[in-house]
Length: 115
Length: 117
Image 1 (spheres, one colour):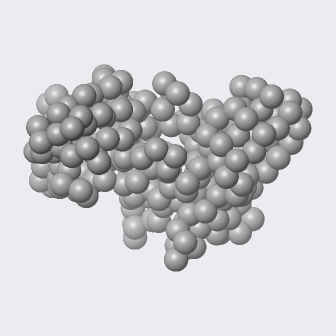
Image 2 (image 1 turned 135 degrees about the horizontal axis):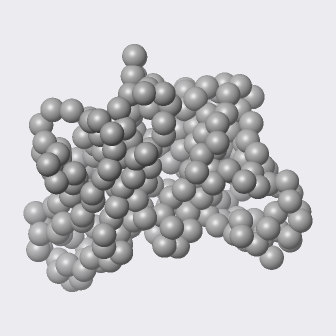
Image 3 (image 1 turned 90 degrees about the horizontal axis):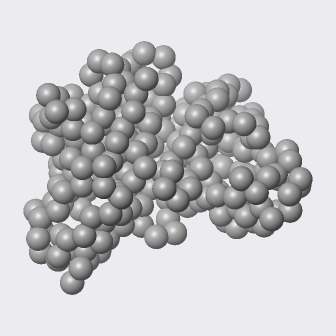
């Protein structure tokens, strides 16, 4: 079975500082990994994904994520946080291309960027 | 191009009442999903569909039924609402890349906030 863990419910960071939102996963075989963001009273929006290739994935709004197979992690990062980055962030995973297994989402991490 | 739309946006039900949530997408996506979002629980999959006329159970299917009679629509039904079904419901859709199943981006609707009294 596939699963994903976001160990922090809340991350606080000062504006202009780098931010990291952590995600670890468990899946048989090669994972397909995603980050989504949810702003207040909105649906989730896609940020970035790792399917194959370069371990450093760049996405929307200056975010990037690094796939680390040995540590089974896919942490979301941004070099300089903005107040507008404050939102709820979800990591998601699915296993290799067998059947129609949908994505499994983590519980979410609330990011608060303080001016 | 409206993307994924959900109807209604808000609804209050009494225990035992029934209702149907409508999800519509205009992106010609093969796959559609219904999730519920509860505080501290993240996003949990209720049912999903890999094509017109097909549906499958997700993580928390009990108390819900779905239908996908048309490719662009995915309906979520509550036959007898319970307070435990108070939640925010999200619909999503995704497309299939040639030869690849369910690997790609999901597009989400704005959500339906349901309260069951």
